[in-house]
Image (cartoon, rainbow, N blue to C red; front, top):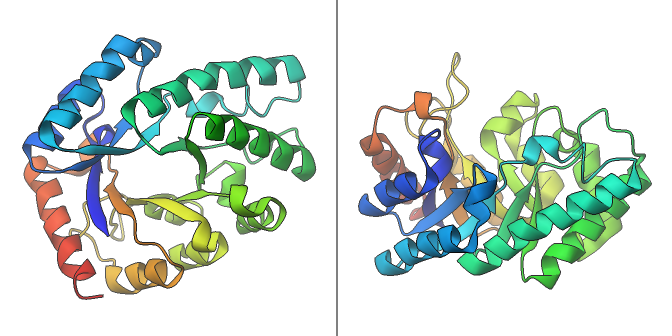
Length: 261
């Protein structure tokens, strides 16, 4: 398993600045969190890609700034707005393709959404198919207050959509949903394509791995047991670590564990 870092770690710094810090620190696998519509301009995206290429790095995934709007647009009961929302997301798919990023992270519909399960699944499938036309995998992340906070929803996606059900497993979000992270991994199974990783203690639910009280060995063994051998992406908030050294130490900590699994 590779250890990567997301530009979101340094938000509200601009992604190009955050990316430079991550690459300068020696990370060679990154996630890019796009924070504004202007950051979808081809010239801007090409500059990000050039940074990565010059460093010999790759972009594992992108994260849209509009995740909070997905229930209103992509999963709206008003079909015209849903159609327009999907057209908006084609810009993200184009951006991911330009960055050669294979994955786009999706939050999806809110927990108290207006669509029934069948309509929700059809809507997700349509988004997935649109992304696939650009060579991009749309992956549902488990997120509190979204439908994906429910194990039943994760299972329904796999049961109904088969190979079109792909997931981002987020450790801190599991806790925020009140779920055992290993139960989330079990529900997602071999459909996990990306992982957001962080640590926690009794008072703070987002810390650099190695700074909290989580024993990561069983968690990473569980991931490996369901067939995951991809990226462990460090995704924290700027207030949860002191400096780049904390992220580098977290990377070393996780690499030490993974090499002994």
